[in-house]
Image (cartoon, rainbow, N blue to C red; front, top):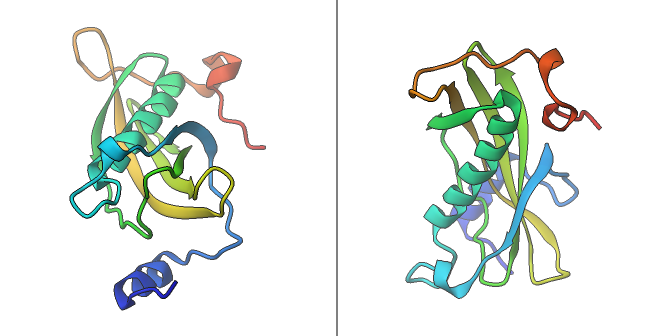
Length: 155
């Protein structure tokens, strides 16, 4: 399959190679379905973004041990399209923890078909803020105060 010039530029810009491994921990996995397509028949970019936000929210919520809200994300480029039947894996990794905020790196990889080739399709950094029951920012606990499941594994 030949890539168009724009796809080649995005791949080069994102320095994606065939042997690259996903960064972070697999947080969610789902299959792209026909209802998730855009008029061109590819999976709608907003659906992919939603899956990324869900996974990043799981990661941030476990780390903060309270409700979290998405406040921003940096730019993202769609490196390759997601197709119906692809299995989308969303990987997350905590980049930075502030007083009440967290930056979560998110990567999306697909497996084409059920046993096909794995390909990276996009990535972005999401910023979350931990909030209390009234919606006010609240401190993120120190890593030493967390239950085992909420501590990032470096394995």
